[in-house]
Image (cartoon, rainbow over all chains, first blue to last red; front, side, top):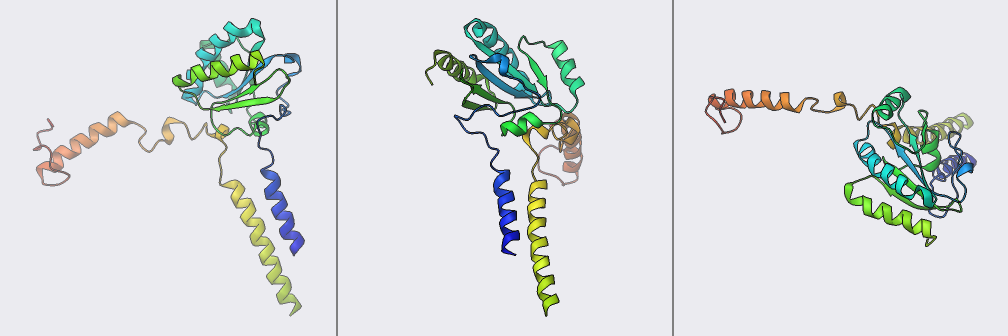
Length: 156
Length: 77
């Protein structure tokens, strides 16, 4: 009896262990191979076409990426639309210069423990998560930019 | 007596397991809200049409002393 209760409690406890913390290494995710981005500051952005703030953030992120690409900054976008064709159609109309990975099954957001849409994970040159930004508003642009610049300088 | 204890314990274990399973099923992950975000999932899927109908309804009912006090049934309020 006691063992059964312990098993249930352990199950519930383990289900909450997947949470990503600041300072953690990049979670493993089948759809995403970040090995070619070593020694780069990365912004892993989770987005979907049904999420208006996600779409609103893309022109800004694209401009930021193009501005800082030669300094070692890259954005990896992970689309979580269940219908990949919809996302592909959107990208055909509104293309971005950074790589986009499609994850309709939701394995990557589960591994990253995404709490909101959009979610941006700032990863330093050593592959550690340094900051997580939830949501997007126009007022957030300066903060996102500052965080990226800090990581490029190695300040964090 | 032993059967009674066995059934009692089984029910307790089943209750705990069901609680755990139901707890998992109640949440929708943020990245799985594509269907919930569709227009047809809104309580008011067509705000303009709803506003027009409410306006007409209010105007007509006002003339009968119904909904609210604004307007006199002419439809111009």
